[in-house]
Length: 200
Image (cartoon, rainbow, N blue to C red):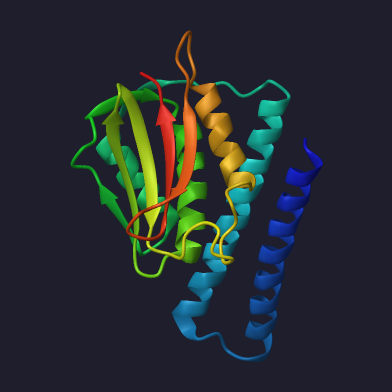
C-alpha cells in the first residue's frame, strides 16, 4: 500500500479514536447529555468500523482478491437503505432521474457511497443529497453537499481513503471496453459533488 495513503488512514483513525476516547472519559466524570452524546459516540464507532472495512477492502484489492459480484439491484430501495445506514439526518435521496434497476455489487457500492456520505456530512451546512441518474448509458451515483467546496482550506482535495475505495469500486465494475470512473468537483451553486460512474 502506498505510504501516503497508509499515513492518511493512520491519521484518520487516530483522530477518530481520540475523539471517542475523550467523549468516553467525559462520561465517566459527568453524566453525558443524555441521548445526544451517546448517539454521537455510537456514530463515531460506526465511522471507525467503516474506516477499517474500507482499509481492509482496499488492501484486498491491491492484493488482487477483490472482485465485483454484480447482480440486478433495485436502485430506489438500495439508495434509501444506504442513506438510512449512513445515520446522517441531513441526507435526502434524489431518485427522479434514476433507472429502476442496475447490475452492480451492492456491498462494494454501498462502501463507496457510505464513505462519500461521511465526508459530505462533515462539511455540509444544511443538506447532503444522495442520488442516481443516467449519463451516456452509464449509471452516475452522486453525493452532493452545500459546504465550502474543494480547495477552500476546510476540505481535502479528494485524495483520502474514501476516494481510493471509490476508485477501486469503479475499477472492479469495469468490463471489456467498459470503464468506471470517480469524479469529485465543486458545484456552481456551491458545495462539492462526488460521482461514482458505473458502466452498463
